[in-house]
Amino acid sequence: MRPEGSQVLQRILSNAQSADDTTSFLAVRRLKDIFLTYLASDQFVLESAVHTAAFVLESGIMKPIKQGLEDIAAGQSWTLTSDPKELERNVGSGTSRNVSLVFLKPVTYLQALFGLAIDKRTVNFILKEFPALPLLLRTIFQMETLSKLRKKFPEQRPDLETRDAIVRTLQKLFLQENIALETAQSTGFFTAVLQYALEADSPQCLTDAIRRVVCLIQAVCNDFDGHALKSDLLLFATKVFHNPSEKIEILWTIRILQKCLHDCVRLPGGPSRPFPKSPPLRSSVLALVLCGEFLEPSDHRFLVGFACILKHGSFDVIVDQQETEISARKDPVVVEIAKQLRAILSADTPGDPTLYVFPNKSRYQKAAFEEAMRTGLVARSRKSARRCSGPGCEKEETKPGEFRVCSACKLAVYCGRGFRVRSTPV
Image (cartoon, rainbow, N blue to C red; front, top):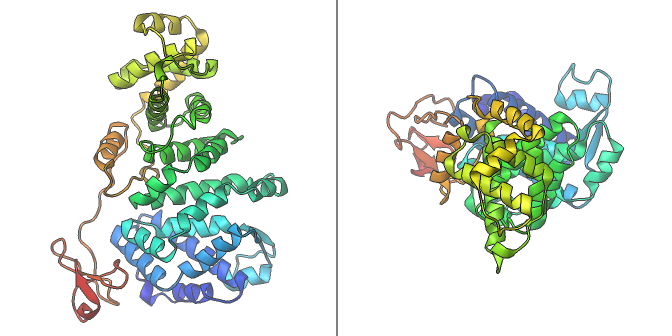
């Protein structure tokens, strides 16, 4: 993509700065559609995408997005019903079909941010322009307005759509580690996140919610309070094990449960404290005990012990692996669940790598990468040579670090042919 010469993009960016809210919103929406389509296409090149995102961000796209999200958090309208003529004038001919469409404003703004947050460089730019964004996202996620929208549009489920967009976008911001740490300390937010997954009713909504929540919690698992979230975590784990879709969701949920149990034991008098019994969860855990050949030995040992704790409702138990496995094989419900879990755990299919984001330079980076590789994710190759961002210049680096980075946006890179004055060495 060469944004400088695109008349379509220039028009969109101009409309985004319009004083008319409808014109501005529809411009952001069209930008979102174009950019997300490019990111998902075979033409996607990382540095080209970063260059385009940098151009869009420098052109002031954060102003209408920031204003729109702040208005939503302040209680203003969450939806826009577009007049067919207005839609055709702003989005393009042939799109209106003489039908008024209802747009969900927060979803459009969040999807635009999701597309622009390509890597740490663009994330830093976004957060520099909008430092309160993470807090605002957590606030919107917990607003009662979402429940009202659900009643108004029951078939569209705007509450799930909005929360899904928030979780995806917030996780992109975790590329800046302090955002991950700050989010991990928000117990109220994670309570709402777990409830969002538990309330998903349709199979597809449930699958999407489980995937998003597992990835979000795993990204901050070492820092959040497992004991405070114990009840919801146990219910969520039951949902995951009874409705699995990917191997990595099962394995990471096991790790999340280990964190929860560790935080409970760590409390004063931990080992003698009672632990809530949960027959549905125990059935799933016993089923996983029967899938030991697909699990790490440490995970399998944990599951055997956890099954005993769930059976007796106390940490003060004697763990007997052989007895636990015999008990599991005698239960037809457990055997059936184990059959389903084994089919997924044995599958050699990688998950969606765009879902699993960790802080770029965090203390968890190495462990997170090793864990992702172990659970089936495939690292996406990254093109090392960067292309000059100068208008009309197609020159590429012959070695890493050869070009200079823009001192203004810290995103664009220049080869030095007349651009050196606004650049600083990498």
